[in-house]
Length: 236
Image (cartoon, rainbow, N blue to C red; front, side):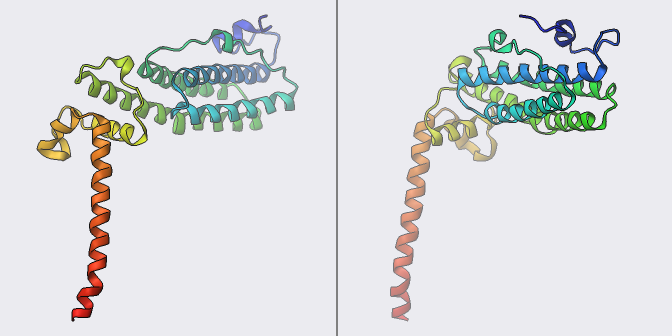
C-alpha cells in the first residue's frame, strides 16, 4: 500500500501545487526520512550486532521520530506509512555501511535546511532545527570517526593477509581494544619506536595477555614495596 503523497515523500521535495499545505508536507517528509534512517540503522545492528555508533544513534532516531510524531498529533497530520522495514538492505561491509551513514546524515542536514526555508510555523521550525543540529553535531561526526576507524582496521588486517569481511571478528573486549589501538598506528613506526612493527603483527590475544601480565607484575611489585616500607621505618 502506497502513501497518498508517495512522490513527495520519495523525492523529499515539497510540491507547492499539491493539494496539501506546505506544513503538512514538510512534517511528513521529515518523519519519512527519519523512518528510512531508523530502518537502515536497525538492519546494520541486526547484521553486525549493537556496535557503536549505530546502536546509540538508533536510540536517538527513535527520539526524533517521537518528536515528529508529536507534531503530527498536534497539527492533525496523518503519519506516513513506513515501507522501509521491507525495503532496506545493508552491505556486508562494515566500512561501506559507515560511509552510507555519513552520506545519509549529510543528506538529512541538507533536507532540514530545505524544509526550514519553507516552514513558517515557529514550533515546527524549532523542532526541525533541533533535529538538524543533532545530525550535524552528533551523528555525522560519530559516523565520520567510524569510517576513519574502519579504514584503519581494514588496513591493519590487510597487512596480515586478512580480507576486509573478516576484519571485525571479535576476540574479546581487551583483545579488541588492543587491536584497535594497533590499527591506529598505521604503517609507520609511531610512538612505540622500533617495537611497533613487531606489535602490529602480533595477535591481539597475545598482546592482551602481555598487557594483563604486565599489569599483574606492576601490582605485585607495588605490594612488595609497601610490605618492605614498614621494616625500613623500624630499622631507622
